[in-house]
Every structure is written in structure tokens, then in C-alpha cells.
Length: 296
Ligand code: ATP
Ligand code: ZN
Ligand code: MG
Image 1 (tube, rainbow, N blue to C red):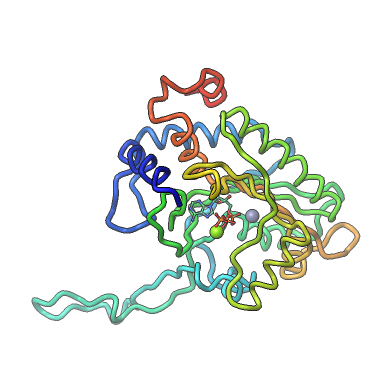
Image 2: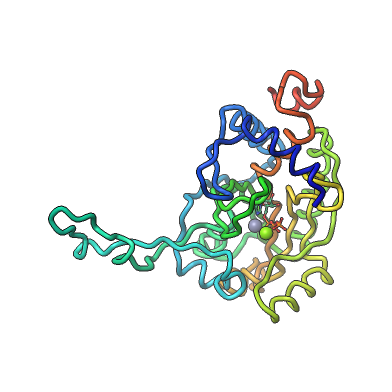
């Protein structure tokens, strides 16, 4: 990593974040929030008709995430919620209660991606209609990947459009959103390229899964040179899960076959960082077209 990129981003850091002493966890400034709010609105403006909007909390059912296979595939990223059993919650006189010593894993985990809760919800409603289903979802997400780099946070916000239907419907959806994602990046004045990518599956078996994912073209990322040209940052991803969630949740299409699913994911914090890294931290100096697109 050329230090020029690191120095350049460090110089604009105070305009975006206050530090907490923990890598990858930041307090966001008003300026940063103004831009992520505007990004959210711009993404909303491109929402397809017939899309159902849902907003998720930052925690989700542990069982749901385990059923999805996340704990097998990404154990190194997963964060759970530990709680103290109420009956043990007592401090000795004059002593501070050592809560951590009495805490244990609960039925909650931190949501690692915005779309996970939507598949069991859709499955609970019965077979997917012939036209397919589309959702607009968002969540604060957690991934245990602390880093000094501001494009890799432990807690960040993800906005997604999700499609559930036949393989052909999902692939068409993904193609539309990949094209729109490119248009959005252009409107935002960001330089970018698309690349076939994989998820960071854990372990040696995981390497095979990741390789298969690339070979089958299941994940494409929109990469923006935030820190450097040779290590660009994935700001959006366009994913085809085939029938993984359909089989997992017995989610069927109108013909009774396991439904296929896909999603277009926007990392709001990464997109905002990419904007500040590209155009600077003075909104008044941003290109007119970018300001107009965002309404800032
Ligand atoms: P990377 O390859 O950089 O780790 P990813 O493949 O893990 O990214 P996805 O799982 O596709 O990313 O998540 C969707 C979007 O969420 C990403 O395109 C990115 O914008 C955002 N995102 C993912 N991980 C982080 C993170 N640690 N910090 C900030 N944003 C993130
Ligand atoms: Zn998703
Ligand atoms: Mg990742």
C-alpha cells in the first residue's frame, strides 16, 4: 500500500470521523452523515416499482444466521451478543460487578449483511409469485475485521435490493442493477471498474468455495480507487446466490422448485468515503453534477 494513499485519507479523517480508540468503529460527523443520507436518497430514487421496503435492526436471530451457514463459512467475521442471566446479576457490597465473567452467548448475533433476514420472512409467506419478489432492505452490519483503513470498518451501513424468483429473473435483476450501479458511480463522479470477486470463506475448504464463486461469476464488485489504484475498494456488490437460500429456507418459486435469489448491495460508508477521497471534504468544491445528483 503506497503511504501516499494512507496519508491522504488520514488528512481528511477528522472531517468525517471522531475516533473511539477501537479500529473500525467511528463516530460520524454531521458532514459524513449528510452525505450518507443523500446517498440513501439517491439509491431510493432508483428503486424499481413493486419493491417492498423493510428496515432491519442491527441484531438478528442467532438461529437464523446459523441456519444460513454463516457460522461455518465466516466464523472469523461473526459477532454475537453476550448477556448476563438476570438471576446472576448481583454485585457484592462496594464491589463492581464483573459482568463479563457472568455473561454468555444469547439468542442474538450482530447482523453481518442486510439481506439475511429477508429470506425466512419471504419463505413464511408461501410460494413466490410468478413475477418474483423484490425487496429494499437496510441494516447496520457488523463484521469482525478491524483495520486502520477507513474503508474496512467493524460496523457499517449496508443498503440492498434483493430479488427472489427464478434463476432467469434473478440474473436479469442483477444485470439491471449492475448497469444502474455503474450509472450511479458515474453520476457521483467516481472512477470505477467491475471485477469478479469472492466472499472470504474460512479455511482450506473455503478457498475452494471462493474459487468456485469466481469461476461461476456469482459475485461482481464495483471497485473505486479510494486508497490506491492497485488496491481499490469494493463499494457495491452484485450477487447471485443460485438456490442456496431457496433450499435453506424451503423457499419455492411458483412452479414449486427452490427459488433463486440475488442482491445488489451498497456500502453507504464506503461510498461516502469514496466521495470524500475523490472530491475532498468541502461540499461547495464538489463538481456541480455530483452535488445536483445528491442534492447537497
Ligand atoms: P471486501 O471484499 O472489501 O471485504 P465484501 O465482499 O466483504 O467486501 P459484501 O459482503 O459484498 O462486501 O458487502 C456489500 C458491501 O458492504 C460492500 O460492497 C461494501 O461496500 C460494504 N462493506 C463490506 N464490508 C465492509 C466493511 N468492513 N466496512 C465497510 N463497508 C463494508
Ligand atoms: Zn445480500
Ligand atoms: Mg469482506
